[in-house]
Length: 526
Image (cartoon, helix red, strand yellow):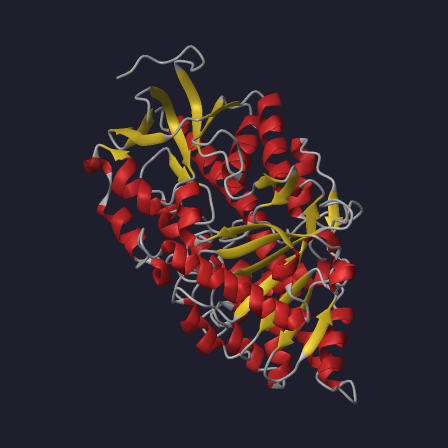
């Protein structure tokens, strides 16, 4: 065992492995409760994928498209409220539209705008009008569906922090209970909508990484209610601003945050966590650990001794399906959005039609992909790049297994094939040759994610929300999944699943589990 450097104390209440959004949210929550917290981050900066990079002296957003659960100052939603409570001061910019949806086969082309404070009249009207609604009946159906989404969304926000019996749930949250066992497709089908309307409403599926037939209605409802009822936001100074300010706030609260410190082992004795060992060999004592690494990695590679891993933990990870990874082309262009004819912040483009079965099969390959989402950062943040330029990204979230066959020899070929395809696809849709205007180009492929973050299989979205494993089941089973006393997890693989907003929520949940364990140990005199 290497001798501990002077900057490590002999013991901490909690060690947080990973300084990305979830880990920092855990640290903030625990430090606010007066716990002595140490955050160990393997990189030289916080944030994980919530980061940015600099090209030609210009900072460019690395990954964030939009944040949910923010809301305006006068009506803050849970993530803004949490940041405010923790002293994390971020200037939020509201994204002007929800999305534009373009079907390259049917010719559907509609811009959908969000409502305010849970009002869905605007998006319902725009979707209905795009489908040729003559008598207002389609508008009424879509509005009822979106209001149902909002009811379920409000229930999830309550139930995620309030324990209730099944009888209490049924009495207080009947719509949540009635729809919890059904897929998004099954519930949408009861509204008897034309396929064109369903296609428009299905656009966001890429952000949860599963098609409507297998996607729990609960998850889809939360996504639709948040984005279409309240709108989305981005930080003026990109996602890395969140990471840095969360780290700064944690330090102000007394947490110790150390960079360049990779944790290799979580040490367990008599069934209880007792500390960690870093890659440099330092052993640091703590009876509680919040781990940002996937349980797949933690239970198979990090727990020491290996015999401390219960059989149930291995069964748990083997029963999970890893969520999607990311392929993205990010460009700095030499003209403004107006000069290039780019009018929309966010566009979902189904170049070969909105056939989700075909798109899903395509997503399980190494590409090329024909369902993409494009983002023009400057249309939400005009100062994102110098005047006369703009930042434009094109993204698909494929399945990890499509990239299992990547080798050192074919990696560049696969990467360039997809990047060129994306650029040609969007150039055709926009009617402008994007490649003629590229100042800088960055390609983010699944191996990029895996290499940079260490995320299992390059996944950015934790475990898939499926009909067999989604937020309702996870809420009911969360206490039974703490296989090692003193260990909890924080990341996309936690209860709420994917996205930067949910990552913050998952970090808070990981901290809450630790606080409950501390209380339990105290009662038992441990």
